[in-house]
View (cartoon, one colour):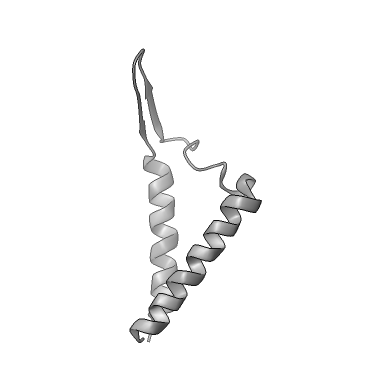
Length: 71
């Protein structure tokens, strides 16, 4: 796949993500609230580790990339 096609695909993905964030924020409310996501709250600070959410994002991106670049 040429560099131009890859950049066009990335651009379309960014446009779709921007539309989802603006017009349908309810579709991404799950992010950070799954079992396995760690929230540590103190008097002065908040520490957040979205472990489970990042595993799901990684699996989805891996699946999409494998489907796009499959020969």
